[in-house]
View 1: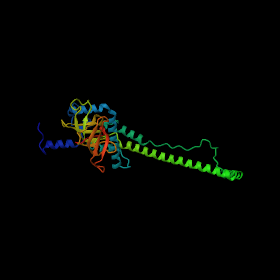
View 2 (view 1 turned 45 degrees about the vertical axis):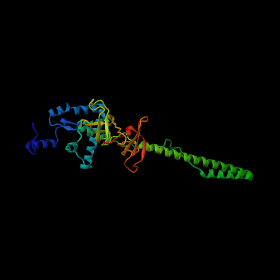
View 3 (view 1 turned 180 degrees about the vertical axis):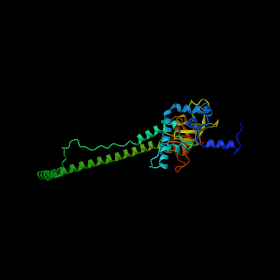
View 4 (view 1 turned 120 degrees about the vertical axis):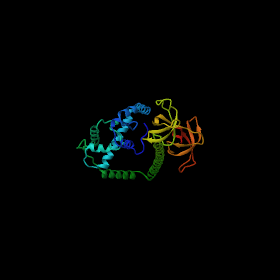
Length: 330
């Protein structure tokens, strides 16, 4: 059958059907595709794209379920906060407004089977509160007392008696020994301060280096290579361009040779090293999100030397950038 003409009754009916909410049992959350009837949903489940998504989900199903559950929870609570505030409202009313959005996360893809289960789980999580206990002393009879006047008086009396018993020469000798000991103590304290300050600086630098590194490296408009074999030889070792990054760890990749769009995890991808003189994007480390030019490659250390081409440090040469920390720009 041919395509319905513009503004024909059939075309208008198709637009109305596509715009409105349809049956949830014919919706595929992994592919984010809504089918109109059972036959369409069956054909979708047999398609190659759906099978690829199932392969990805089979590697770590808990990760996908946790992600969908967290998204459902955050969107539901955000709607509850903005729409109803602190008012008492039935959960079905909030849920009906939530599912009115066609792109919402469906409950059948979360860890909760029904809305009642989600409401009970939410109530248990929100009721958790810290438990405060009374401060009690183990022994009530023990008391702490300080007698400073007696100590100070005894010390002054003993020092006056000692000074009267010793001669002037002995007092001078004792004074020199005390000054020498005080000088040694001050020198040792200064060394300790210098050492501790140096240690603090070194610790701060180490923390700074650790803080600038992240466990995700995907960015749009960079060239990547598919390394997983679970998608078949058609895509293995093939290159593509990242068009969109989702939840930091997965991306929509458009394959260069076929034009197919795949949703892949970063563990299924690797960076691409271009020819010398080509532009790259630094993906991790101190110069993260900085464009650069590939200057040379050190094959023994699996690293490269880059010349920064953006930002305040443009023109600066940086050495020892690992292969996995930069990739070719599209």
